[in-house]
Image (cartoon, rainbow, N blue to C red; front, side, top):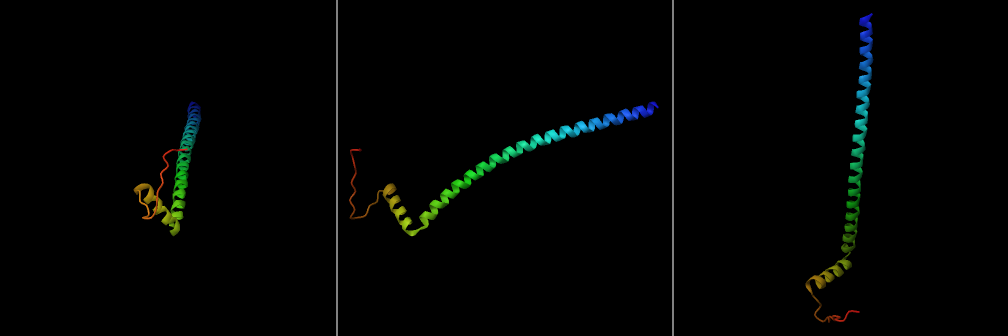
Length: 98
């Protein structure tokens, strides 16, 4: 009888311990997954921002791809960065700013 009671007590403790270990594992897993989800959401936001920036850059390049726009772009860069002008062109600088 004592042996049966000890065996019954041991099985109850083993079941409770197993249940507690499983519960702790489940809670730790859920917390870990929530942290991973949060990190992935942050990464997704960064990637979407990069995509938007690249799309803007691509649109600018597409606009430049048109030959007429390319010529205007080259002229603007030549004027602004290098100070080039056409031979018969006159440049007027405004000294008094209004």
